[in-house]
Length: 99
Image (cartoon, rainbow, N blue to C red; front, side, top):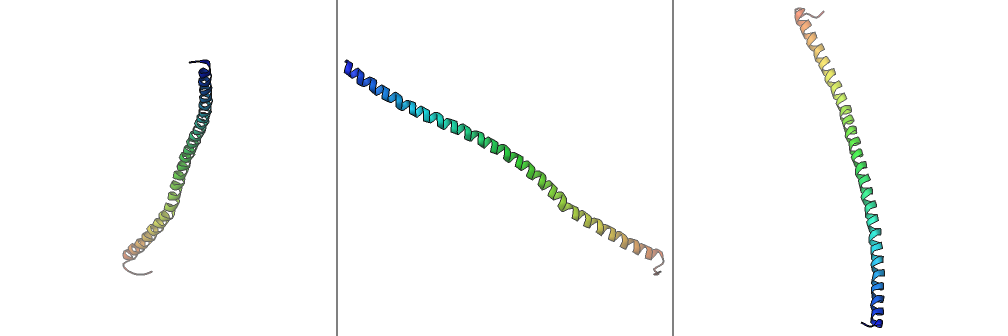
């Protein structure tokens, strides 16, 4: 290989090296962006977990609030039945006479 061919070859290698350097720089930039995206997804995942926990607690509290009127109603019905039964028993014990 003569000097002219070597100069051409060196020029080609130099050109390829510059091209490869640009490609590597782009890959590094994309890798950094991918790492940032991964971190962002991780943060979102943690936030979603906390949100789900809060929703579960809210759901539990809502269930308790919904049960409260039902328990009250059951208590009122129970007392009404007790009053009616007591009145009937009192009536029967008095010999079936009204006061």
